[in-house]
Image 1 (spheres, rainbow, N blue to C red):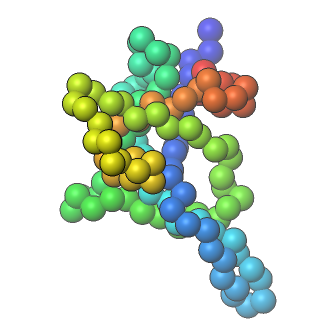
Image 2: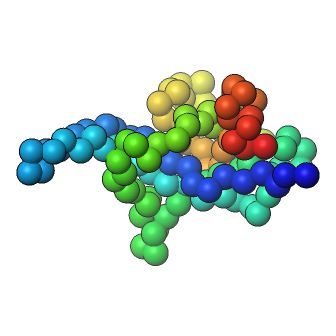
Image 3: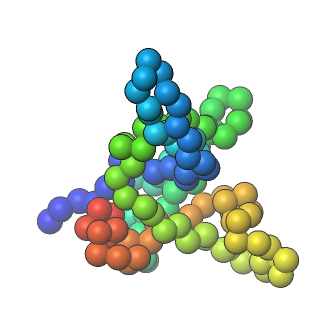
Length: 115
């Protein structure tokens, strides 16, 4: 039986490119996520991730080359027991929730990677 794993996961905040010595480098600014546990959730079979922070409690932000992006991921917030504000906008979800499921059922590629 194959053990599933997620090596690294990041939220792309923006894409940009720069040119150095005549070579264009397409990049992305990303916010990194950590696995919340050593294995997938027992009930759902999905990995749970949470935003990464540095030692000063600042979000862990990085710049990566776009060629290092392997697959898009669909994150589902862990809603908890509190009511969700009716005025919450979808673009505020990463700030409004602390942990997320990595949806391995989004498509067959995601299923192969996260299973």
